[in-house]
Length: 75
Image (cartoon, rainbow, N blue to C red; front, side, top):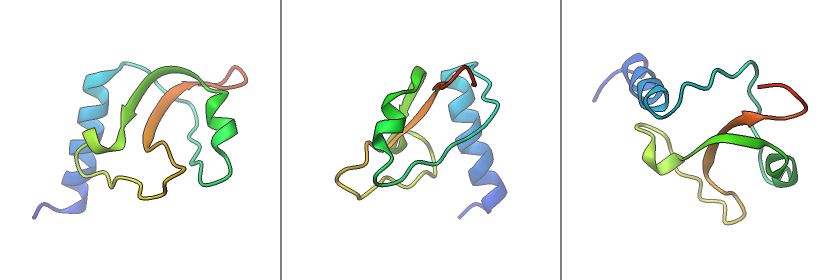
């Protein structure tokens, strides 16, 4: 089993291989905040299951995606 730093690097490298989008801020949306997520002008959507070392959501109402985009003019 690889160490946490290596797992994070693997996930980050995979995400970088899919997009050159550079976010300014990050939002973690949980149950009840899906409407806010739908307002994001998505530049790239990556299912959690595709990202190495990410855990897939088990919540039935959760989309289970990493969404990179803009919201209210912010990346």
